[in-house]
Length: 126
Image (cartoon, rainbow, N blue to C red; front, side, top):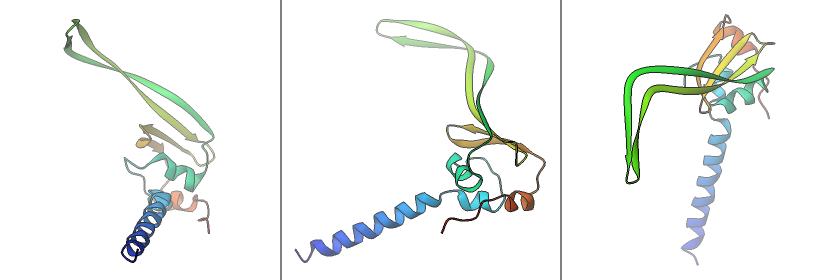
């Protein structure tokens, strides 16, 4: 029993630290006004709140290759054409549009400076 207590305490400490780290995520980066690819969309919700508008944008990539797929039941040839969907978040009130690929920032459009983006952050929760 005495051996189990330290193990349980370490496990609780580990889970608590992991939960706190996950809670903050990329929010400090957004709060600093820096934008870079790969920032999780939750960070923008934490720092700027919900976007004014959202939509799904689909791009069609044309490729000159042909791919083949074979299974034991037969095969198929596919011409090189793929659709790729992104989520677009528009923060009209902040003057910024964000494009996400699988919940990670892929691109953005804004004329705001890093200092201006830093000032737009909501206060940190206490």
